[in-house]
Length: 159
Image (cartoon, rainbow, N blue to C red):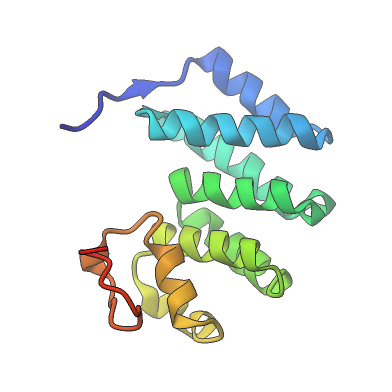
């Protein structure tokens, strides 16, 4: 059964945008966590609100605040839930900038798979990473039957 869909109230969207645009890392992180949790629970943004929230997240990820690993990961997780091709270049940029941070790499790969299902558009970047890491990251948001699972040492369908 598909969970019911709910739309965020305009007041909630305004509040979330204000929290995302603040320089307070803890408030921004809580807003990103809230967006992810509510999205999992069936809430969604209208198209215009979604774009505004996405812009705020991309802006945060392109600012000096992206040095905070938790903000980066939660921002990437939120983009994996609601991001569009608008945020694709931002995710690639974060992936390349923080290539030595495994948590960021996993979150960025998951977001890329969700935002752009055509892996050919970013396969050159993915080839830099361990195949198991790529697949496990992608499985956060992609159905297993859409991936080549031959590089995993376990059968994900039976495990």
